[in-house]
Image (cartoon, rainbow, N blue to C red):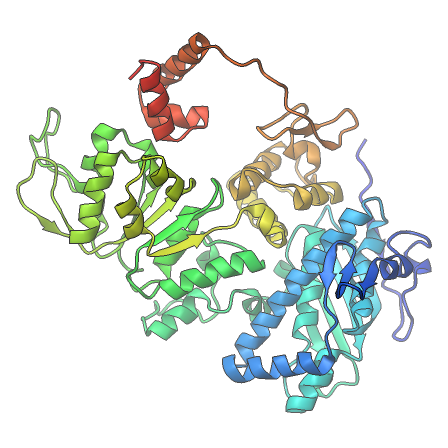
Length: 571
């Protein structure tokens, strides 16, 4: 029997009626009193806390001054984007706080905790007019009045009555809070605002895909400089058929996020994109290094030229030179024709070298020469070929530690480390999880021809709180699996995401009650040298003696695998 899906409909309220705790099941947590009790002042050490989050007591006039300065220095559009994204992040984090501290609270009260926390912060006095949601089917409709908005007070004092709404941070907060609960992007729009001359502010919230012209508002949720604004600053011609607001097709294949950590990385990419500097992406496996590299290429002046990617760990040592620099006919047995390498194929474009730490020291030396001299020689060739290529490298290991261990050339590290960009793990950008969930659900629903309406509340809560050791790639795989397992028109639940008894390398699985649980990993007996040798020999044989492939199967880097094979006498 299917678990009933929480559904709330409170659409009969008249303007002026207040939505009270009684309307949302009296006594259900978190109440206004419980939220108020979570706010603690510690005058002795100069700190204010809301549960485990440190807070700041700020004068409204100070906030207004900051707002005026940003508008004056960056322009109204960029200032609005900044405040909207800051508000979104705050809303998503408050949603996580409510889920964490009141996990068994009534879902309707959990949603209503957002407006209550808004009132508690002193930003605005909200009043709910309509509130209707169904998490499993992705349905959401909410309408609120806002009284005494601090943003309006300060905006009107500085600029008077205008033609556009001004509650930017408040709208961002409402959107972030609702998105974190729904597991998909919810967009609030201020349809009336005191800064436009209305008596009171009024907002309406719906899933972004249910607004006819969502792009008008979504552009303010993107990082400060979108790919198109970078191109305009560079005065690079944009394809004439591309509309001013980027289409969904254009957005496909680009990193998705709005969190502070994501925005910081995206900002660095946009700063370096107009230049020819070498970029080094670092971060754990699965954070999306190639996706960011493709975005860097797409917004650079080289966007009309090739983007060529090479996973260095997937190419045997004996072939890496030919792959990078090409080969002349007759250079070795089997070389029946001349062919260009990756450098030549990326001419005037971008060459992306992933897992660069897996290159042998010999290959590293030849790569260093190509980067310094900007010329290459094909294997078996006698002439130098000039190349104009921007190299972007990536590593999931600390290259400085590899240098210290003697496995990576220090001079090559200096050459690659011109503009390093650290990509954050997914656990440091939880605000982005609902957006990624929605994007992957839409992508794999279309790919596999499955009609999946959304996620159950339990699935949303689980994914938003999960640490994702496999990062974005793990979330992507979990959602694809769930889309395949779910029945038509059935929302995705936890058992679609995590299989019973499964422990995918991080001790996570379903307990007997069907809840996600963390189990201590079983302590395997320490293998003997003979057992180790047999295991490595079998992995090498199954990988058809491809050292890089065998290393990947065993969860090692190629240099680590090569070292152990030599130590065991297998290489």
